[in-house]
Length: 598
Image (cartoon, one colour):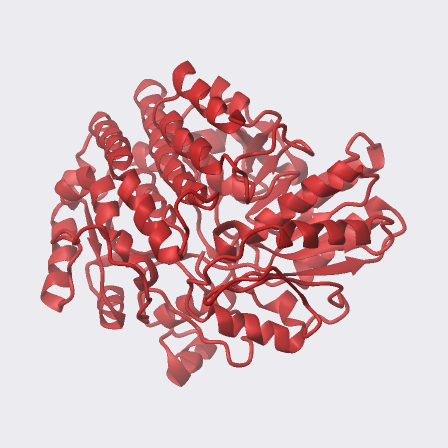
């Protein structure tokens, strides 16, 4: 989810390539010194990390499904033990004050890691019993000859936590249901070849990404892993090692920290057979073609520096489409808070943060909604702009849009929540449409349309053809009982070329649920990688999915604890970590009690 620039870059903006370029970030010291497995700074030590996991490839291949379940159970227990120090260091590094609602965001990332490990456990138990993970419902026929796999809800706890929510994974056209089932959990069906050594270049923004990426590599793709921490958040290395101790002690995983030389060393290591990164398209190009003018020339010739496969989860100018309808005053306030959260979460440093709000120029309530959105943003405390070059990026957007609304006042090191109102949709070169503003800024643009369905069709075309990236998009629509609007929503979900689509749900739910696939829409070549290629999460182990779709209610009641500024956020999301580790009536009751506490 790390992204600071796209093509074309903003004037004056710098590109940060995780694992290739090192920054020094001012922050508090980690709670404890990192263990020896993470304190690697020289080539001899780096080589030892690769040699260790490479030397244990055969043992990993011969680790039974039952033994892998045991390892994941240890990961869950060890993550719970690591959680308090992990959260404390993350809050310290991001300038989050103890006791404030934003602390809940960091607990939520622990819940995501724990849920991911638990769902993988459940899929492995299904493999022992049935030969493949058991979906929570039958495969269905989707539009255009697609097979649609239901993946959520899978339990009574899912239904109670996310009432009215469902998710599905769409497979590419042309595959039959029998083929989808026969290819599920492919790494456990095919002859066990010697596992590949994978280099994971971790993200620098949120703490759940790197653990989730490597769990996917190990337990879905059957690889051994060297995780290279991003310098922005390498203070998490000791906490990740504590959480993933079972895999480290087995010699199947090494977690390393280092500078540009370390990243370059790993990328060029002959034992590394696959590279996965979370970063920008510039990160991908630096790895695949090299940096500087020579890299540009190699890209033009299609001449790779690395021969191994490279997957990447990159950035996105993430849209949310507001379908016009008759909304009450409370609807306007709720959805304004919803969209404000899509920017404010993690201080705006998310690849799935909404960057463009698309409204209908003919919607009578457009101005009222935008006023409510400004009010919702202004009511939130400003956050520390902890990510490198955030202030420069923010300033570059304001240079293009000096009339942008800057909301809220803060101290040194913060940036205002910023809304560019009325960006011209007829200007495809506007950086609001071409460049991900990796900071506290979003834009709004209005499209014509004499009806809601006509507007929605135009919005889909605008997203596909004008906005940069294909990672994720969201729709908010109230009148789905209207046959014309319902048909337009179905067309939109079918036609949006994004790896994840949310309907009445911030598309971040596709990331949070873990059962969905997460990654760019397939088909990007090396020469135009945009949001990347490949997927992660995907705990039902569906092979090469096209997209995930999450449907939610127009309004959740009560307001979810992950909404920015929720007064019970920390208590609720901390309780959620324990619920995800051990779903039971007791942990469910504690989670609801925390959420509803006055």
